[in-house]
Amino acid sequence: MPRHYHLKARSAAFIQLLGWGLILSTTTAAAPPATALRIEQAWARETPPGATVGAAYLRIVNGGAADVLRSASTPVAKQVELHASTIDSGIMRMRPLPELAVPAHQSVVFKPGTLHMMLIDLARPLKAGERVHLTLTFRDAGPIGVDVPVRGLDEGEPNDR
Amino acid sequence: MTASRRRLPERRRGVRVLRWIAIVALSAGLGVVVAMRIGSSATPPQPAAMPTDLFAGFVDDLGRPVSGRSAGKKYRLIEFGYTHCPDVCPLTLVAVRTALRDLGPLADRLEPVFVTVDPERDSVEVLHRHVSAFDPRIRAYRGDEKALDRVCERLQLRYWRETNPPGVSGYGISHSAILVLLRDDGKVSARIHFDEDPGVLARSIVSAVKGAESGARPGGDSAGREAP
Image 1 (cartoon, rainbow over the protein chains, first blue to last red):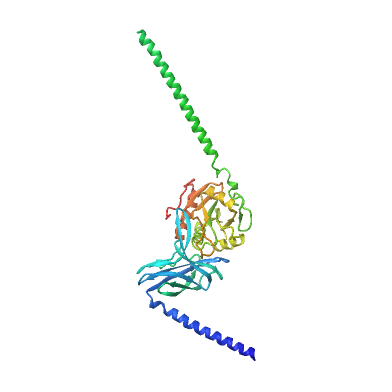
Image 2 (cartoon, each protein chain N blue to C red; image 1 turned 30 degrees about the vertical axis):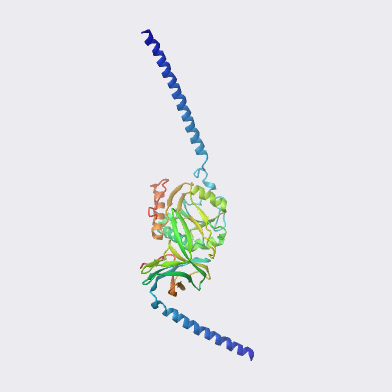
């Protein structure tokens, strides 16, 4: 009897969690229109089998006041870092950025060879055709979620850029 | 008359002395130049003279020791990179993959090589899975620091480990993003500059290989004009 009761309590807790999850996801889904920030043309590159890192790219369109991108996270990687790649006299250098300014009424573009979100310690390789969720957290706008399609090696950047 | 006769030999003597001084000075100068030439040609290593040991100490992604020559291939395309690089390195490999496809039958003459600058994290197995995902014709080489330093010196490439600020996991490695088209005799056929657009980079690779094949660029050192 106590075991049965315990099970019931656990499933009740699970249902409650699900409920909270639903409420949370609807609130995050409803959040974007409230801010002047828009995330567009997000994509991630397919990763080779066994890869532990990946990269995601996107465009942050700011229709309002200046904001700051503080961090990013995804369920498929332990950590997401903002990185800037630069090519200087033939040398590729990569430096992590603690945060990134999003000036008022401007766009910030993450694209190959320049700015990218580095996904560190991938739980599994990213496969072409799937979608991964990415949450960007801004100083003022707070968290904004975006679904990121994974593109094949041959596909490259979306053409509508 | 007698006075002028006496003066003439004196003048001649003076001219002779000047001539001797000039000869001695010239030959001394020549000697210095020759000595300097000999000295300078003896110091730098000659890549063309000893192509076989350029990749001594390296193993490929199948665990085979890399000899100085690629079996049956006329060219090697050398790319520095590492598998923990999420952006520029995969982009370059995508370009190499596209170039192999666009080269058609000419691709049989080319062996693209991903030389890891991170032997610590890139094991032979990791490298094999990594490059094979882009194209099974792409090889990877792994060597220790000493072996890498030799390649850097001969091919004028660079790499170094970055010290990341606290709170940042792992480490990044800065490295040359230039691709080197290497002939089987150890001579550099072309140096191809990186481009953020893999399509542009692929075209640079194709034109470098075609140029080398047609002999249009013997020993030329730049194929990519699109460098940033």
